[in-house]
Image 1 (cartoon, rainbow, N blue to C red):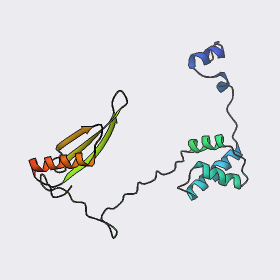
Image 2 (image 1 turned 30 degrees about the vertical axis):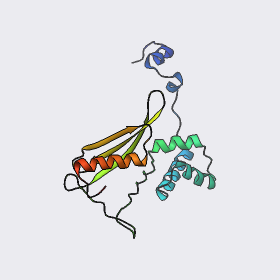
Image 3 (image 1 turned 90 degrees about the vertical axis):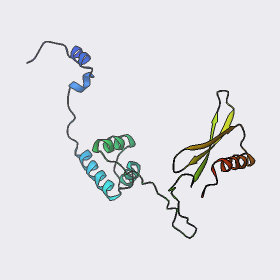
Image 4 (image 1 turned 45 degrees about the horizontal axis):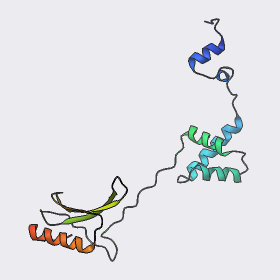
Length: 168
């Protein structure tokens, strides 16, 4: 059913540009061959991205720009697989050690240093000591400066109260 409504008004109401209503693009055999070759190269080089495939296409004398390549790559849904994170195995190698898991309270303590800034921009540091088994925070030392002797004093105080752990 055709209505007598101007094209401009219909496009404005629909939120579309007027040029999208005029004609569809004719099929392009060059682009079809380019996409086919692009897919072949992407399958042959699975861990490479569109820039690498673009370089290979240009070496093969294909006339393709970076923007067209980006559009076609996205249109075809080609992705590069994410890199796997390499997990370092602590116990392997000649200098490796076995990570001990806590099996009881007060067996393994963990220490960490945290740094932050106050609202006026001055830094402060915190030393945190945790019991690995109970996940209990044993001590937090907060100062502008933390020295080695401060750490030793805090550990001496903790061992006097709770006893010495098997491992730190």
